Amino acid sequence: MHTAFRSDRRALWLILLASPLVWCLYFSVVYLLAEAGCAINIPWLKFEVAGLPGLSVVVIASTVIASFATLYYGGRAMRVWRANKPTVAQSAEPPAHERNQFMALAGFLLSALFLASTLLMGVPALVLQPCV
Image (cartoon, rainbow, N blue to C red; front, side, top):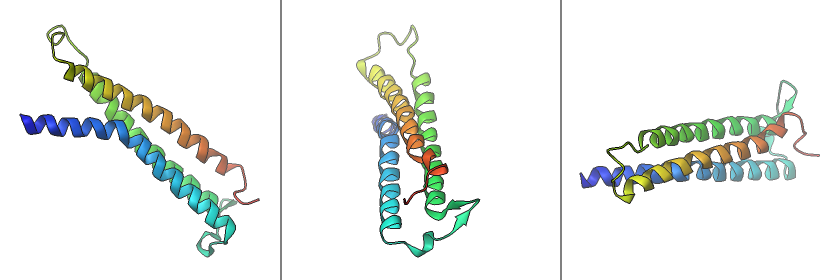
């Protein structure tokens, strides 16, 4: 039983921190690619797809990947939050149950926040030129 509780706690921390970590990785990759692509003209970014420059295509692909990862962890957080809703029999449970519910809800809300942030960073690549 002790190991089940420990793995449950790890899963809660993963649900809570996954979306911010995905966004940090996404932001770092997109920022570094945009800076390097515009400053030193990386040759493997010299292509076009449907009229979009290669850098924009890479930014959009990164946005889609990061958005799906954020949605996945947001969905996991929502399922854990719904599963931990207290019933009448659980109203006398220790604070660990409340902590689990709070961490799952916080993970869901963080996922929504970082999904919006990811989309706000990636959608302009559809209409704006990356290097002006």
